[in-house]
Image (tube, helix red, strand yellow):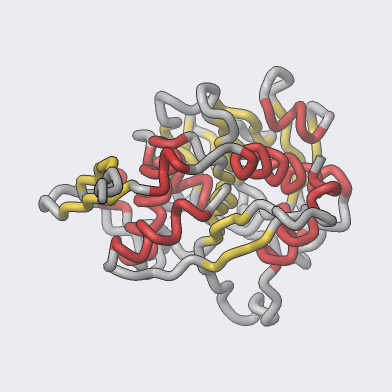
Length: 281
């Protein structure tokens, strides 16, 4: 279990996508790193660069990836060209880093957890789409309530129901829980390869998982702010357990991988992985 990793000299290493909360919510504390450390792993803040060679060096040392919250994803990435003033500025470099991570995780079954925007990116990667703004868009004639809470982020603000047969329900050991909420977008169309794992009381998807992957999950809430609640600690602990299993495997299968990323003019670059065998002396 995750607590055992804290005394290990071989703690799993988790690559974290860098993020920054807007003022006044940014208090200088990186709770993602704190949550990863508390669960028994080593956090590694990933660089954002156009140099795929850097990722060829870094990725084989990662035992898992954490896709964090942050600004909105460019709607063009999921086929929406509508101009909505609520959509925040985009970060193309970050989006392409996250896309590359997802390509890598999908190819090599590396554990991955997405939080808030990270869950949304997971859904987009596998072919889903998003509501541009929950307060103005409707689904099945039901107006979604404001999902960006005004109370402190370490306090739950609404209820979610968990799919009883899902991984997240098994991790949290319950079929319902209270979560915090700090987002204005959400899943519109669920990606075909993903499975909904939680809903709010109005039917908005609040968590997803990939049923055919060892550990690929996403939650819309922010468990890193709810670390004092033992059930939310379990999310990070089970994630770290999966990363530890990955760390215990031999990584030779990925050590000589070259990344080929080509910008073709389509929405996302074309990414492939080439097995670069060492030269025989």
